[in-house]
Length: 328
Image 1 (cartoon, one colour):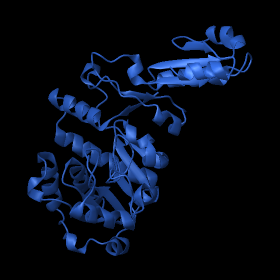
Image 2: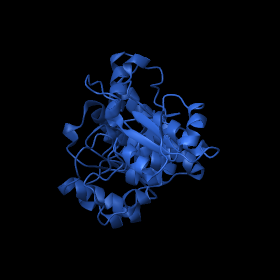
Image 3: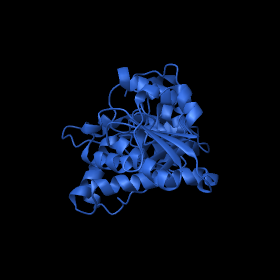
């Protein structure tokens, strides 16, 4: 099983670790930066043998803080690194501000006036997107859109958490369309931390699932009860597209019941040809369907009943019977 987290769940886990005193936010940011650099060198081993030119685009939140760490670590490896920042340096979150100052102790922040698609193509071997991560909840507009457009049009090599503009929960570009940019199609590597997010396997981002690398930042020991217990599980080997459509996020709402989380209907073949339906029914339960019914010819009821638990059965002999089942 692979655990998938929403952005809110990941923030809750990080905060639980910080509140427990096991780690500071600054330490988590450093570990994230180390993970990104490790992932880059694992993806492109030849880059570990000599120095290269990288451009790191940082945003106004903690994703930008991760970017400052990456820039510093690459610079320490002898790389030529240029950093751009979207937003007001003075308004960075505390941990991101610390890493911004650490970067400025060894390099500068370039003027955004020269940030264009052509400039990035001509002046970098690697473009790293650390602008907007899992916290983005609204469409990119104005200066934010223009800042990210240059990067996306030039082609992003590495994105931290998600490519900027995409929702970490749904996998969709937040304004519903990708206009005149490569979107995630040009991203070579996506690096996220501790667990993949639900959006990595849904909608547009699902097309880049093979480019996803998950790096540990040491949160495995957070007490289980401090984690958000509503973590989605995706069966290993389950078809990503089918599984993503059935993801359900459980909430502690008193008036909810199993029907609040979807009713999946699986149509079975006759006796002797029921195996695929049972596999599909078990899969539907495991990825969060509240109710699962297998509808099968009457002669297959006993065969299915002998091998299924927690799954409803309904005999369907003809079209009339099927219409009745579909009314439920």
